[in-house]
Image (cartoon, rainbow, N blue to C red; front, side):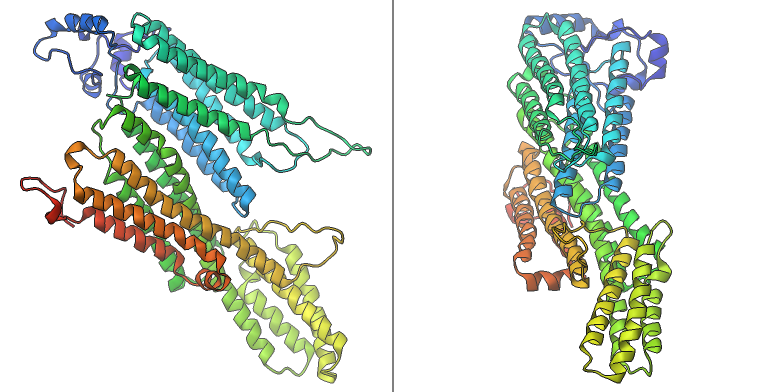
Length: 607
């Protein structure tokens, strides 16, 4: 939208509607800055004199090729829309903790709907948006849709049982409004370009598919269950899979929009700033990664943990991962047009790329916390083990030593906002029980009852302390579903295993996402490779990236070997492994391979 030039706004009043077609320079008053930022869709215009422009416009009509108004850079309205995207992503990432497969799929699902909505709006903006009262109203509605994403974010638990689906029905209507607005925008474009017969069918198809998607979103609203109550009037928990249709509709409508522009080149993205839009969003995704890593660091700082070499190494490695991802992507970014069909496939390829980027960066931040947790648990477990190996004259001395140890290593550093009162009470109870059992064992080591009480007390102490340490780092494990006897106590091993399971999942999706990030960037790099650079040396670079991606993803198969997985999870080499693979790819991308270059060809540079 043309909010960029205040001078032009003063010279030309804002109309209710505006044509997306490129106008004769003598017919509009524009500043030099605005003129410099705009480019033509076609290159058939006579550059020698402006007297030939009317004949060029006539040539467009005769050849049925409309000349759309283009921008070389993203407009301020588009950048402002991006702010809503990043705000939604940051907020949702902070409220949804990925600790099981359900939350992982929920995160991917929400991000997919958010990204596809952003993408659909951007596909229109880069081609047809022109500043007008109508366009500003439409943009306001799109801003409101983004607010709708922010509203449902904290309550986004698809596939889980709930007693109220009102928020999901409202979200379906929000998606419907978004697509109706887009359909109206495309309709206005069709009205201005109807004299070009070649634009009628493709625009009509896009309008039809967008409007159909809107109707389907609205039709799904009644598919969510209504509230039910039992005989006592309590709400009954229900489950619905209707949300899956949202994903299918969003992907199908996007594929259709891209396909239409591939088949009918008259509304393609040639001459647009689509490449810049996708690169800006990639930069936003990487920025989100910086935010989550900084939050992980702040969680460690709040607990006043000592900065060990392992933790410092993880933080440095995490920052390098972001920097290497930045280089791997932007070093292969080509602003020049590289083919209408390839460019559109390239742009839609950012959908899986951005999914794996947010997952790998989110996972890396959790692996930093895991390393710190392992350091803390090693210290407290080691201290308790040493105390158990010592001889005490009374149960009071032993219990006090155990109590002092857990407080020194964990409870003295519980940050504000973390409620550990339940665990502290459990520790107090365990200490008293431990004291009594120890006194009985001093009298008779064969006392089976005292041995059982002692074991239970140590179990409760370790379970409460372990949970408190992870709570202090803002890490929670899914609550176990106890069937039958709900009073059954959960032992320390169950508590510890629940956290191992969480980080086992993190380990899996981090390496899968990290590997696929290299694979997808290699594919996108191949699509964007100019014809002048399509020779063996560049194919080798892309091939190395692709193979490294496969190798990195295969590391996730360690989960099938428990001993290997346990050793790897307890080590500090998970994040550095990703860094080393990325570093190899960066080096290969900048190495000059002279044996594969023809004489006279200039290399991009030397490493």
